[in-house]
Image: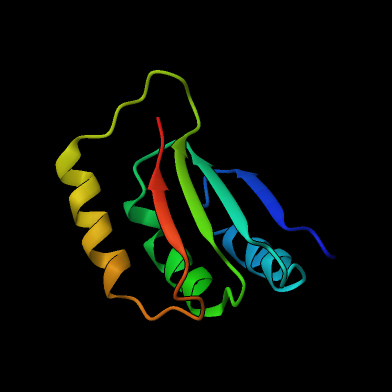
Length: 100
């Protein structure tokens, strides 16, 4: 597929991750990836690591809560950010944005 924009609304639980990985492999031109999740982003760190490692043209990952009104404590953001910054990236231009 030649999509440049992909929006995932998912729990990213263990059963969903393999299928989503295959989906992302079939979309090598994705520049913007939005991930909406019901929980904090800590459980999806391994998935994000793989996305950063393999996203050659990736420019932006936007992480947003799935349900309105869910707030994430700033210290949780800091921990996730530290981990994400330590991962190797195929696209040095890729940025990660927390929204919501």
